Image (cartoon, rainbow, N blue to C red; front, top):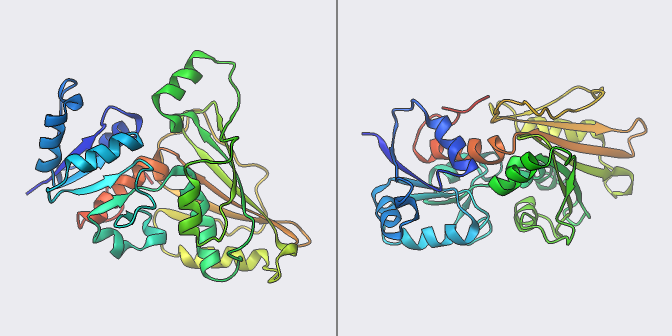
Length: 309
C-alpha cells in the first residue's frame, strides 16, 4: 500500500521542489488540496489526519498552527520551517549528524536550515572529535541563491536586474543561530554573515579558522582526514581530498538542482590558517532534497531514492 503524503504549503518554492522529486514515485500517494482548500483550516486538518506523513513547507507560525491541527493524528511530520529545530521532542533531520536510526524512528522531525547544513557538516564532526575547541569564536561567511528567501525575494531580484549582492542579518540575530550552536556543540553562537547573490540556487558556506591561535594547533591534513572519515561511504556528502586548492569556487546562475554537498579544507602554506568550505544547493540538501532524504528514512525506503546526485 502506498504511503499517503500531504505537503502543506505545496505551492511554495520548497514544496514545489519536493513534488518534483516525488514525480513518478509509486511508493507515495499524494493528498492534494486545490487553491481554495489549501487555505481552509478544516480541509487542512482533514488532510493532515488522513496522511501517513506530512511535510510542512510553511512560515514558522503557520507550521506551528499545522502541528496544532494535526494533534490526535498518528501522522508523522517533517517540518521544513525553523519553528521546531531546537524544540524538545523533535528530531533534527540531518542524518549525517543526528544519525540515520534516529531519523528513521522519528515522528516529529525538523528539517535543518540551509546555512546550518553547510556549517554543521564542517564543524560538528571536528568539535565532537576534539579537533576544534567548543568554545572557539567561530565566524561564518556565506552566500546563497535568492530562492532561499522565498517568493518575495525571488520577485525582488526578478524586478531589479541591477541587484548584484544583498547582505542581511546585520542585527546579528539570525534565526539559524540556535541550531548552529546547539548541534555544533558550541558554547557560543557563531558570528554569522549571510548574503544573497543573483543566482536562483546554490550556496557556499565558509568558516575561516586561525589555527595558530588554538591551543591544540590542529593541522589542515588532520582536519581534512577527520571529515573524510566521518563522511566515508556517504552518497550525499563528499569531502574533497585534494591538497592543492582550486583556483576558484563558482556558483552558476543556471545551475541544475542538486541534492549533494561537497566539503573542502583549505590551508595556508605555513599551516597557521584554514578555511572550511561547503558547497551545496540551498534548495537541495539545504531544503527539499534533505526533506526527501528524511522522508525516505522515515518510510523505511533507500535513503537516496529520488535524490538528484
